[in-house]
Image (cartoon, rainbow, N blue to C red; front, side, top):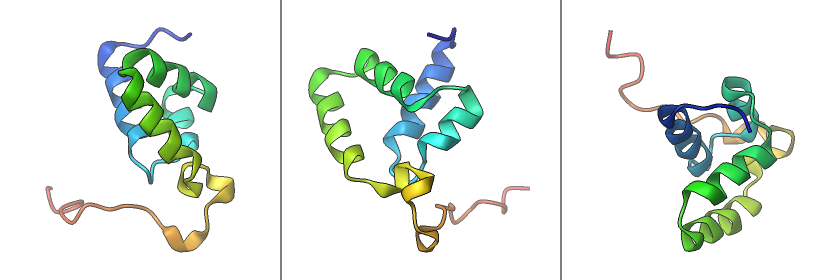
Length: 84
C-alpha cells in the first residue's frame, strides 16, 4: 500500500464516497487502483458503512468512466469559479 498522509486518506474516502467521482479520477490524483481504494475504504470505515458503500457503488456506472455516458456530465458547485 502506498504511503498516504491522513489528509490524503481522508480525501480518497471523500472522493470514493461521492457517486460522481470516478475511480479513474482517484487513480489520476493518488495513483491508487480501484482495488486499493476498496481496501482503504474497508480499513477506514465501519463495517456497516463499508457494506452500504460497496452495495451503492456496485450499481453506479458513474464510478467507471468506461461505463459512463456523456450525458451524466460532471458535478459543478454553483459557486465554482466565483470565488476569485
